[in-house]
Amino acid sequence: MSEFEPRHQPTALRLPLAPGTDGHAYMGCDAVSALLRAIATTCRTLADEIDPEMIARVIDLEADALDCRAVALTRPCLTD
Image 1 (cartoon, rainbow, N blue to C red):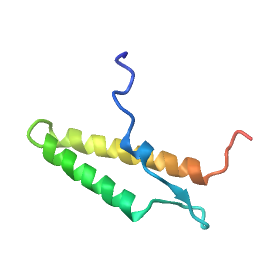
Image 2 (tube, one colour; image 1 turned 180 degrees about the vertical axis):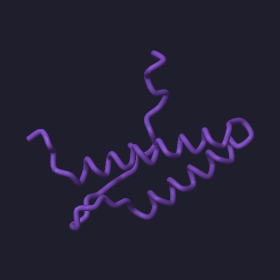
Image 3 (cartoon, rainbow, N blue to C red; image 1 turned 120 degrees about the vertical axis):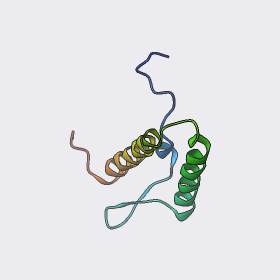
């Protein structure tokens, strides 16, 4: 693995999303609950090892990945 390759794919890429009839992307309650529990577990695990700002950056990256998936799911392709 090169220094530029990610160590893992964001968890948000594995979460189920579905387009709603209103054009928004939606996640089931069980997926949201699992995501929040994973965030809480990660915070507890890393609390003594990593700077809280770094934990916040990782959570922000997950949110960005989820936002990108939602946009890709609900917006028409601009290359057509």
